Amino acid sequence: MELGVYTFGDVLRNPRTGTTISPRQRLANLLEEVELADQVGLDVFGLGEHHRPDYAVSAPAVVLGAAAARTSNIRLTSAVTVLSSEDPVRVFQQYSTIDLLSGGRAEVMAGRGSFIESFPLFGYDLDDYDELFAEKLDLLLELRERTRVSWSGKHRAALVDQPVYPRPVQDPLPLWVAVGGNPQSVVRAGALGLPLALAIIGGEPARFAPLAELHRRAAAQYGHGPLPVSINSHGFVAETSQAAHESFYTTYAEVMDTLGRERGWGPMSRDQFAGLAGLHGAVVVGSPEQVAEKILFQHEVFGHQRFLMQSSLGAAPHREVLRSIELLGTEVAPLVRAEVAGREAVGAAASA
Image 1: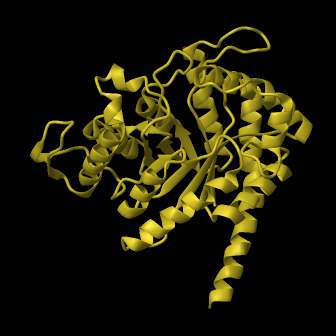
Image 2: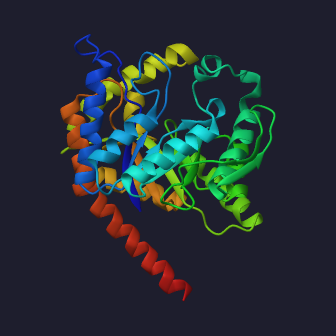
Image 3: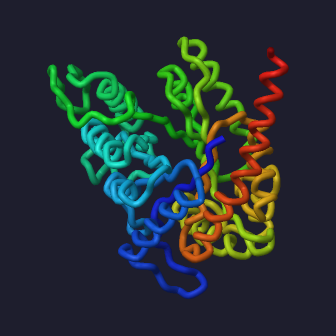
C-alpha cells in the first residue's frame, strides 16, 4: 500500500483570524510539506490545478519541478491535470521534464475537472466537456507510446510524424485517470489499461465500491491485468482524536461551506462532520491508530493499492499540517503497510 498526501495550494480565508495567506507564502509552505513528506517516507505527493483566487496553484508542473529539486524518493504527481483544457503535448513535455529532474519519479493524474474556470480561460466550450477529455487522453497515450507521432482530432491541430521531446526516464510515463464518480470515466480507464484514482470527499466511501469493480471488469474485458486503484480523501492526523477533530473541523467546514454556496449545499454542522469522520464516512481524521484503522477498513472494501490524504485544506495551520504529514509517515504508514502485507500473504497462501 502506497500512502501520500495531496493539495491544491489553498489560500482561503482563515475563519479564526479573518486573514488570508499570501500565494507566495502558501507556495513556500507547500514546498516544506513535500520536503517533509519525502523525509518521513511517504510514497506520493500530489498537486492539483485550479484557476481561482482561492488557490495558489494553476501550474502544478512548475511547482512539482521545484519539488523535484528538493526531494529524493517521493513520487510527484498532478492531482489532477485538467486534461480537457490542456494541450497534451505540453503536458507530456512538462511531466517528462519533471521525470528527468527527479530521476524517474513523475506521474500524471488526468481528469475532466470538478471546476469549470479553465474552459473559458483557454477558449474551450463546456458543451464539449467529455469529448475534449476523451480526445486529449487519446493523444496523451500516443505521446507516451512513441517519439514520432501522427494523430488527428477535432479539437487540436493534427500531428504528422512529429517528434516530441524530451522523453522521460520512465517508459511509459505513469498515467492515472482521476474520477469523482462518473461510470463512463471509470470504464474508459479500465478499457485503456490505466490505473484509477477515486476522489471521495463526501458520503460513505462504500458507495464507490461498484466503481472500483466496474474498473476491474472493464480492464479484464479489454485484456488488461489487475490495475492499481487509489483512494483520495480529505483527512488529518493528530496525537489524539479530539485534537484532530478540533484542528480540522473549522477549516474543513469553511471549505465545504464555500463550495456549498456555489453549488447549493447547506452549511456543514459538527454533527455532519462527526458522521463523516466515523469509520464509514469519507473524512479520514483522528489519531494515528484511528486513521490507520479507517484506511484498512476501506482497503477491505476496495482492495486499493494507494491512499492519498488532503490535510492541507483551506486555511489549515501550517504547523499542524506538517505534524499531520509527519504522523501519517511515521506512525500511520507502518501500521497500514504491515497489515496490508499480512493480508496479501494470507491471500497468496490461500490461492497456492
